[in-house]
Image 1 (cartoon, rainbow, N blue to C red):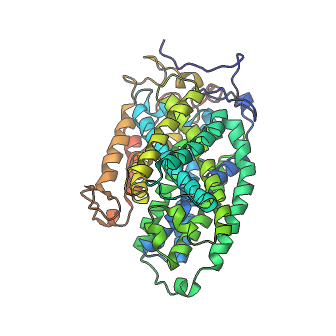
Image 2 (cartoon, rainbow, N blue to C red; image 1 turned 120 degrees about the vertical axis):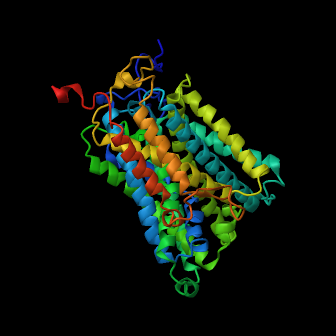
Image 3 (cartoon, one colour; image 1 turned 120 degrees about the horizontal axis):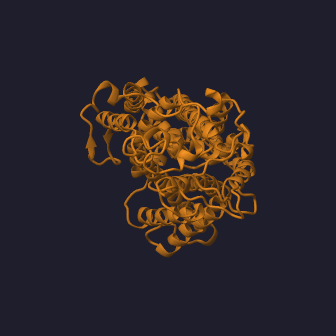
Length: 494
């Protein structure tokens, strides 16, 4: 019997409460336990994106792409809110099937064919958690410098650096380990607290901006805006896309699709547009933010000490809100990959990996931000290819068999041929190959480590490789047969 195990407590599964651990792993949520509203998604995505990482993303639009602040704001709206609308689309699948996104993906790729997309998604989540952990540790080092006069250089003070990493990791585990109900509650009230602190700091930064310098900036080319949209999308919604169904699986089945999409787009879009725009505004007068190895310290140095403390507290809180949601999603992805442990233990496995990654970036590596941009650019290709296949499948599929999603035995509904839906897997692989043909991978100012054969074409030069990847994935999937298996619930077919 090669079926997924079900983690139980007292014979029943639950989403957990504010004081209890969620016992459900990747098992689909029964209809009578789905009572979530779109508003919950709004708060979850709003809180997850009150992150300091939006500031250096915005800084690159001005410093590297040569955009004005107004162009950067347009890019932020399209890239951030637009990409999170896609996350909302994936949430529809979560509402339909009541299971995490990569678990639902078994119906599309087959129980074995889904291993590839799931592994890429897990790598993406672990990468983002490493970025969050590294940045949060920089935040704490800066806070320690102000409060206690310690050396803020990570390499010069390795013991304190490790302590800073572990403080953030422990805080993450305490929240993400409890599960869905606790995360939803924390995200809502924490949005007000850390959101207010961010607004407080933002107003101060805006008031000290040299508006003459900002107003004298020449407009950048449209091509730079298109590239910027791709960069922002890859660094925001695309990175979260595979997690769209993970929270939405507890949503009422009666909730309209449009409500899920608008809640996701607005929830993430509002804070991201503000933070990306603020980063662009600050960088217009001082380009050092985009080039900083420690973006936290770069912004801290712009502030008086009395303002730097609330800024650092807000930065730490925002990163924590993003990270515990990412760890929660990563634990579900780990279980989908076939690791047979309770969800709480999957959380522990994930944070061990990201702790080691953060230690490497802070104590060994020479830089932080350039590898970060490279990381999101590379993983955006296979994730976008998965999106193309999955969304094309959603166009016809209205139902996911809850029992079959957990049944890994030969001959099960989603076994297909040898455990693989070959049309879907072929579409995913072909789209990845085509996507990388239009991609150039470069870390900072170093020589490119990979140059796609078509990266200097109009599409490649304008950063549209991700669009081609999505279209190719969807078209190849539909041309090779499209969705398979029973696509509608039994009662709908009757």
